[in-house]
Amino acid sequence: MEKRNLKKVDIIFDISECDYLAVLDKTILRDPDEVILDIIDSGLKGRGGAGFPTGLKWKFTKNEDSEIKYVICNADEGEPGTFKDREILDRVPEKVFTGMAICGFCIGAKEGYIYLRGEYNFLLEELKMKIDLFNKQIREKGLEFTIGIRSGSGAYICGEESALFESMEGYRGEPRNKPPYPTVAGYNWKPTVINNVETLVYVSMICRLGPDKFKELGTKDSRGSKVFSVSGDTPSAGIFELELGMPLNEFVEEFGDGDTKAVQVGGASGHCVPRKQFNETIIGFEGIPTGGSMMIFNSSRSMYNVLHDYLEFFTEESCGQCTPCRVGCQQLLKGIEAVKKGERKPAYLEELKKLALTMKVAAKCGLGQSVANPFNSIIDNFREEIIY
Image (cartoon, rainbow, N blue to C red):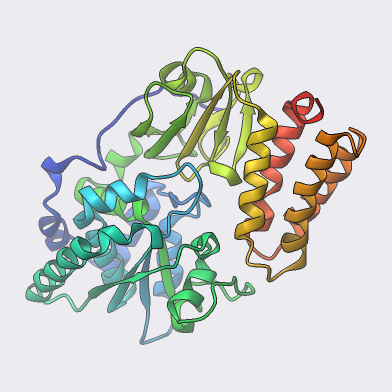
């Protein structure tokens, strides 16, 4: 794997280059297919965690034969330990709007919506004012595209794209069967591009500076930079934009407190990396991808308590639609409690690991499928803390 030294950058929050209307003016004079090719060439992958190539998503949606298409900005930032999208929407929302308008221009959509996490409703009033101004400005330029905003009700499951669509349509937030995928049948069952807040900002940057500039950062498999939410046992908690493809040991040297024993990469649904694996772990798509959450734990922390908290979270947030997730989350939680109390022998942890892997295969959506990531990585690396 290619390694790059950790490098701090300042692209997302750089106000000096936030002339979003000029970027939009330049972009809508071009052929939409050429713009999409630039996004593909840049290597930009979704910054929400899944990492699907952004340009390909746009291309597939553009090629769908439908008069009605949509652009959705997923701002349902519910992953524990992640708080970057809130800052982006608070400090540079125009960059997000610009990315949405560019997407609408490229795929032929006339409507876009921001789906805002329910706990972020304190941003609503100011966001609506800025959206109204942006809509007015782009109408004056002759671009037939408007942005609206929808607020969720605090359900973690609605961060999953199809559950988000259900919520926007007024139904209970539950994942849909796939296929069809959103590029074919998304919001209102029409072709839809759904991108993360951060992804849309990088679209604006690529359209302003070109794909080659974007590719100067990161690695061959992880192009560009990423905004990380750093929390836990660190003297430098906060939001930092860093190159992708960095070794985890450099991250720990920069943000750890000198006694870091584990880093939870990617929030509760991500992987828990122990100290012995810091040198060999890459933060990026060639290693461990992440939506941005980096939770640091030192030797004072009980990894049993950490895992217990994660399982309580998943048990609470499971929508209950599919049995593997609904029952599996409960059984994993009860299982580690039984082992800790001595009601089950330590060997029972192996049975629980098999259950977690079954959930990874059988659960309907990413919530149930991802539970195995923290569960098995903590069990494998901190078994003694679960048993004793």
